[in-house]
Length: 391
Image 1 (cartoon, rainbow, N blue to C red):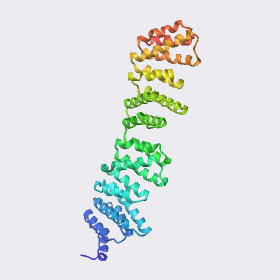
Image 2 (image 1 turned 90 degrees about the vertical axis):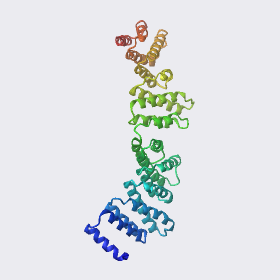
Image 3 (image 1 turned 120 degrees about the vertical axis):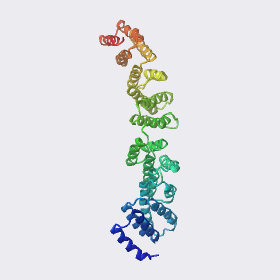
Image 4 (image 1 turned 135 degrees about the horizontal axis):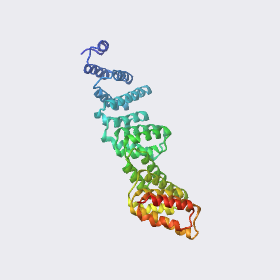
């Protein structure tokens, strides 16, 4: 066999002359890598391979990573460690580019073996890029653990979290959505939270299932549940999915019981957001009638009360129309008893057009009664217009 000293010049000359084909070129680089005696020399060879963009180099990178993992305990100097870490970062990037699934086990070992957070992050990203499903749960757990507790070194933790977020983006599995969602609202700096925000729609266009689980779970704060509802509204999910999640949120917000003033405001705001979504995307779910009635009668403010009216008007069902008619009949009774408040006056002006919007003949008696109650001419005119909309 040709001695190493004579081999390298000949190889370089052949490379310059363009004589070698890709397979032969790869064999040459593989031989050179195997003969290298230091991490620095091996790094130089890897850089040359990467620059050459040789097809089929995945096996060389995988072999190089396996060897490095064996050599890590034997690194003695800072220079050796630095060259090794730079090599690993280059290798895992190239393995990701090549979608080289055969390296999955060593990529996870890399996450475990190196303390450098950038090396860990790059290896996590590579696992996602090659869709190494056998290590998906480990990637999820890595991000979940970081989300749950700020590590002793927050800066290092952020770098690892960033890599895990990008990995889960590449996996594009629905099970990875919630860890990234919680990262988007977690303790991290804006850079990491922004990346999580960008990754969410790439993981799932329709996150109905995971976000519904957050809204239903008593283990999450009302603030987090509201953020889940907001994220659903911002998603690319179809309107029907958004409407179902909004309906769930409205019902859950009325099930909650608290004496805490701040939490009551949070629940009220969640209900108002849900009502806005239901109005925007529509609903015909009669199971919502009880919650809508509570929002009308017990809502935190006028916005919530009128929101319930508008949702009922758009439902298109006889039951919803009957409920609206009952609300107006109650207002007529209060007017007769001179118990009307300024807010009631405003609500009547919202109720009457809503009744007209239903188009249901069953609301006629409530609207006709307005004429015989001491309402202002403006209110009576609204009732006449609403009656004109009913066929």
